[in-house]
Length: 280
Image 1 (cartoon, rainbow, N blue to C red):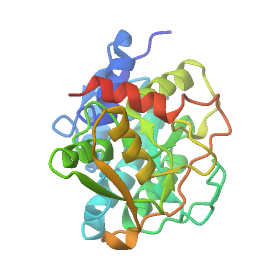
Image 2: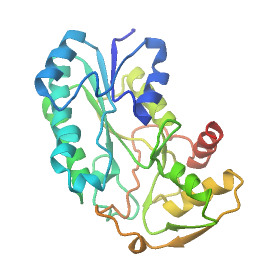
Image 3: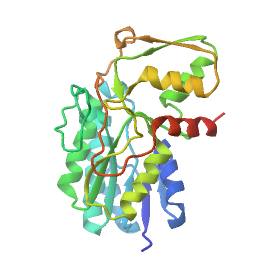
Image 4: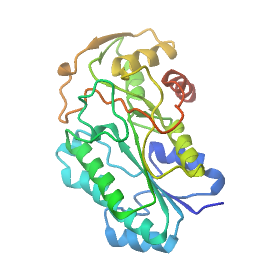
């Protein structure tokens, strides 16, 4: 059955891919200029008037370090705004898909986290994302929370892979941390898996979707080295500790998300190769 689909955060990396994946259903694409999800009355009025049957919320405040000093804004976008949208979705009988993160965990489990593990975020960003999860569960019955990590994609301006390739243009030697572990996620694959969940009428709840890696994940060094190699560049990539690059926000050291509910996504190296072929 054809649905009336609303994509929030349509200008972002994931929003662009969701628009492409659901293009045959002619989704309505809104960004912040169309709807500020932190304004409850505006959310109620505009979404009720549109009356979608499926809401894909890719809106997010994603600057992990700036969240430490902009706590109110991070919690408004990642937390309370999600609750406002969820309440309207419930009133309309719409299904809501919302995207979360490995940062809801504290990173102490070396082998990673399954969907039912207890969250314990370290910093404001993770706390704000967990708040959004909780408010979605409280305000809606028909929802999917999809957690992913280390997102990269064609439309992303700030993703790690793109930053490494930019640095490689004028730094023959690249130092990259090798003591934080996680799983990369290609935005295109995340959007495609979202479509599988929705079209397959999967049970509502929490899902972990990333590209596949060895058990426990890979390091940022592994990701950088493979990107340089696949691009055919000659830069030397060397390891260093995260202590050499202190950052305002704490990060989970072991953040691998383990998928127990769906068939595995493709290998991270295959996804990375496709991404690198799509950019200059």
